[in-house]
Amino acid sequence: MIVTVQAASSKVRLSRHSIRILSPDGTTTRVPLADIDRLILGSRVSITPCGLAALLGKSIPVAIVTQSGQHLGSFEPPSPPRGLTRRLLYQATADEQFVRATVAKIVSAKITNARRALQRLNSRRPAFDKHILSQFSHLLHQVENADGIETLRGIEGAAAARYFALWNLFFPAGFPFEKRSTRPPLNPVNAVLSYVATLVYGEILSACQSRGLDPAPGCLHVTTDDRFSLPLDLMEPFRPALIEPLTLRLFSLGILGRQHFQPHGRGVYLNPQGKTLLFEQYEDRLTKPFNNLQSGCRTNFRALLAQAPLDFKMSLTDPSRFSPFLLH
Image (cartoon, rainbow, N blue to C red; front, top):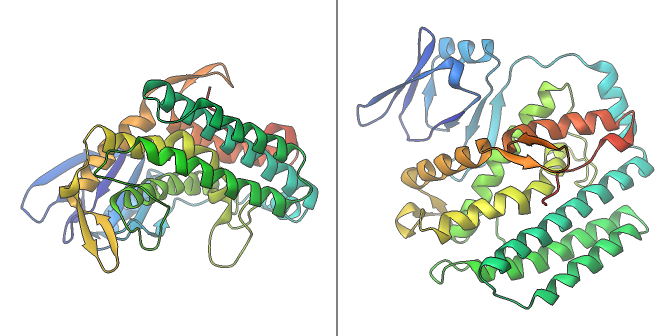
């Protein structure tokens, strides 16, 4: 499970085969190391070197995030050398044909998942004419006939705009979405979207590193010196399948309310109570099993997030091995 410690001035200490979390209010929580998959700490939480060493010794990554959910960095167990894998990765991401094929698969999967997610929502509570979804079929056709990578990026942007315009129709009146805003998030819905995306990004980033992949080069997201592009690529199909449905659930079921947010600077962010509720729902969603019709196996989203970098790694020698997750 993911363990999160966000309250300012909290302390994390090693206690034999467990960690002790000392909260500012004086309460203490013990969590066995064997139960922890990942530890997420707020930027004003302290951890002892012994505690950090014990976590890394058990191959448990430790991520540091800001109040707004921005990923500051991670302590990761040692990555395997994988020199050959990295050489193949650099060659592949410099190969226009490989990049184009990979981007087409990612964009196609994201659009397919967006259309399916909207179909599910609209079947439960109709909010728009179902024929509007034919727009997504048209966009998928454009992906098949795209003449270059920039065209594919443009199609992905157009699909996202149409998706969010329809997705907005399903929110409670007190929590309008309106449009995507990130740095800073300008309303509660954007705050939750960004926070859940940060959690998913962190899981995929750790999975990339554990597979010996350099997370910096990307395909859909251009390779730059100021971000890890590969996890951003691999998480795109999971946005309409996991990130946005979970966000909508938190507001539609009243799990999060106005009392769970606070202003900070020009933005709106989750407060500690809101983060606790979000993490509970996030962990439940990632570990809940379901049948994956692609593989024919029973799985969960945490396993799928870990599998995505491995599938991409396999595609470096056999492009057919990369098949992004699809909703059914």
